[in-house]
Image (tube, rainbow, N blue to C red; front, side, top):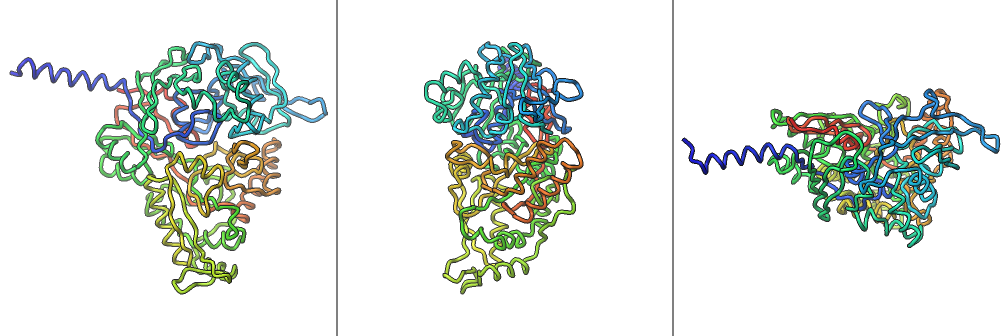
Amino acid sequence: MLGSLALLALMGSAGSALAAKDQLTVGITQYPSNLNPNHEAITSKDYVLGFVFRWGTAFDGDGKNNCLICTELPTIENGLAKIETRADGTKGIAITFKINPKATWGDGVPVTAKDVLFTWNLGRQKEAGFLSLDAYDRFDKIDVVDDKTVVLHTKTVRSDYNELARFRILPEHIEDPIVKSVGVAEYPKNTAYNRASTNPGLYNGPYLIKEIQSGSAIVLEPNPYWYGKTPHFKRVTIRIIENSAALQANVLSGDVDFAAGDGIGLTTDQVIELEKSNKAKFDFIYKPSYTYEHIDLQKNNPIFQDKRVRQALLYALNRKALVEKLFDGKEPVADNFLAPISPLFNKDAPTFAFDPKKAAALLDEAGWKPGADKIRVNAQGQRLSLDFGTTAGNKVRELVQQVLQSQWRDVGVEVVIKNEPARTFFGETMRKRAYGGLALYAWTSDPDEAPSRILHTSAIPVEGNNWGGNNMAAFSNPEFDAGVDKILVDLNPEVRKKAWADLQRIYVEELPVLPLFFRVQPFALPKWLKGVKPTGSGVSSHWAEEWYAI
């Protein structure tokens, strides 16, 4: 018979195990450099905000656009969106946006039309540094019907009129005094999201940020003013473990319940490895996505201004062998910016097959000849040597770098790897293009989202827009811009389909970046965790209130 102390110990152990089921620890590899919903496109930030913040709309795993803070998605069919004639005779769309009547900030203040107007007025000013100027500038007027209803008037007819994922309503009662105190240009440095990140009034989702351990953890607890389904977990700890190998070890040990599969957790090769060795412990999901790994080219580097060099760099890469070896072929080669799962993918667009002989010939034509050590030099004796950066600690990106470094060396291109922590890389380095050669990271889009955020001239981060925008490659092409604009304003499916095909052709011809492969969202979920549904585009945490333990 067990002694009383031993029995109590066993009972305590069992009780702890049961109690732990109402707490969840999630691992991610990147610490968000800021938490303002409208500043910088960082997946780790969006993931954290998914628990605590609700923006206008979001796409689910079925590619369906959903209301998050509104009561009903505005459409032409349901009458909440209507084509109207503007004062100058042009056409626009009047969109009736109804905020959930129970929507409340975490300090008990209702979310109202005042918040919408404040955010819209701020977001239209370039100095505010919002990541998507278009999300706000597309509207030239907003009418207030009542505290919970506004009518948004677009400047033109737009095909994406009800995609409001980047219209992220801010709390006027907290942020407006800051703007008035420091001015619009200084707002990005002084936003309460960065200076008072645990203020409950900043958030309106099922959880609130209760504690921040800088660089290592963010602790969440249920929002007492949340108006939706009560979340199951009483405490969610998001642990930041920048080294993905260390994250994998923490998942296996149970110190982390699971790693976010939204591009900031375990890499696909790691999840494949887990599936082979721990199939009984986890459920596995590989969700095809609209996110693709690519390499930005420093636009101001004279080497890249010769298109032949850009083409040669891509011809030199055996991307098919790369994805087969690293990901068991689960991640397809990227031929352009649009995912092959999209019905608008242009199968007839030119591609770059692995052809090292063609790569060498192009480099010869461009004036780069093999030197004594086989690294190419030009007529002035300059070596064809390029810095190559990415997010330090990301195992798969570092492996990809090593493979590409070897393949480029085979055609006489020297690559020097210089990696940085994610918060530095996605901060000053990428936004201000403070790198010399190559930069490896991923672009994420919603299903069939026009590439206005990532490749349109208006989205280039510059000092004049406080380094807002997400076209960090600084690609600027009038024909491409015109095609993007056509997709946005033309409702004719055939016209839009042709415009999409043209954009893919221009992308391949100009090669502003080097496309590598489209990612899957790889999840290894403990058997007891249910309700987590990958989206393939955004973050799964948008529906964190649906997660539960059994």
